[in-house]
Amino acid sequence: MEEIARGLRFPEGPVAMPDGTFLVVEIQRRTVTRIRADGQTEVVAETGGGPNGLAIGPGGKIYVTNNGGFEFHEDTDGVRPTVQAHDYSGGRLERVDPRTGEVEVLHRDTGSGVGLRGPNDLVVDRQGGIWFTDLGKRRARDLDYGGVYYAAPDGTIREAAHPFLTANGIGLSPDETVLYVAETEGARLWAFDLEAPGVIRKHPWPSPHGGRLVYAAGGPYQRFDSLAVEADGNICVATLVNGGITVIAPEGRLVDFLPLPDCYTTNLCFGGPDLRTAYVTLSQSGRLVALPWPRPGLPLNFLTR
Image (tube, rainbow, N blue to C red; front, side):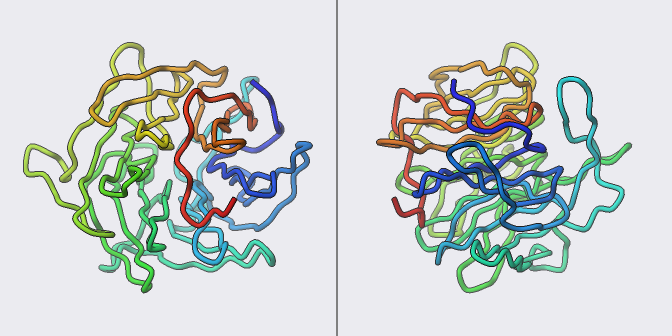
């Protein structure tokens, strides 16, 4: 494992850029941050709130899911998010100009007047539409239901799946006919079959939201965070508490589990020659690390190499 950068304030949403740099969000710092090959960092944009996920979309713009802000606990192990921030500023989907740092709010509600609570992660499809999750927000005595949403290229937004308890990581199968969503608190991976871009074919009850269950983690207590998809279709889920990467085949078979030295292993992306390097955010300890990967990752849309 190679350490690329340290001293980050709860990093997530890594993207390995074609020029050899990396983009991440720092949730506690409330920024989009560029990391250079030598580990030096610079702020690309100050979003406020809680920038949680990051993706490159049409025109090279940066798209950010902003959860509105967390409170954080800090101790000798590092930092970790706790409850909704005292200055919570509302959930939203944002677009950032990487040249100027200008931040534009695209959506603050679900399209029906209901406010987004805690947008978490996102993936951009071939049409330039953005699938994203809303994890909800936790307060001292209650927790929101979240959901899955699609922000279409024409500027509209629709709710695709609700209610969803702690919807987190999201990704598309190589042929973009299946949408995968990781459930944090249940450590479950769900699949949603797609009829068209932005359109889910829902499974009936007893599915709680129209998805089909792919995998439910057993063994030690663990939680699921964000995910990335391999070129062969395997789904790699960053795993909390039992920190590491859980690799799941599309048919629901556990392929592998790679332990990592941070119980807040939150995100990964692929890069390097043949996309055979995994770049992972170890968020509690504030690090971005690289490790060789046995299989190539799936190339991301709108990320020219």
